[in-house]
Image (cartoon, rainbow, N blue to C red):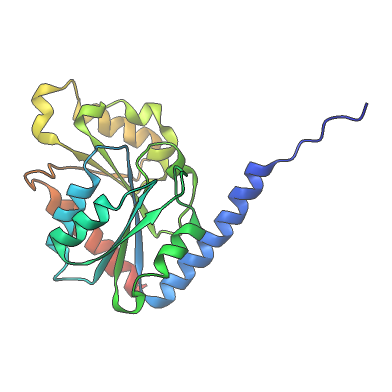
Length: 224
């Protein structure tokens, strides 16, 4: 009997996606548009953080948001109503992540020639989105206090690929067994260069630090 034939599909898919992602990044560079990939688990406060951040930046740079979800347009509507900036919804058809080609399809529907920054709010989970390069210039993730400070140990890839980790819901810190210093140490175990920013999106505390980080990154990108 002939041996079973094994085909390494996953490797091929990732390789093709990385090529698409690099091409997309180069195209965005020529247009002077910075793409941020924002990831987190469901309920961490991505949309609320975005609304706060946009409020601090929309008079300084031109922005748009792409909201990715398996279904519904709840977040895109919320962003547009709260901030007034361009916001579109991407439906993934049941997929738990976005890849570079899906991101490109979204970007084809925003006015890139009128933008400095596009924020992609990825599908909410800590596994699949970390595996696929979207073509973003940088990646950020939001970890909320109720999730626990040990998440960098449990989801190593997510924290390895992120340039900044925003720790949200600091207002409830007294009610949870969450150690911020341990969290920072665990993040830096995975990614020594990652920036950790504690915030409370509900009250706005600390959000200006994240907004300034993002503004600095966009400025550097456009000047390079």
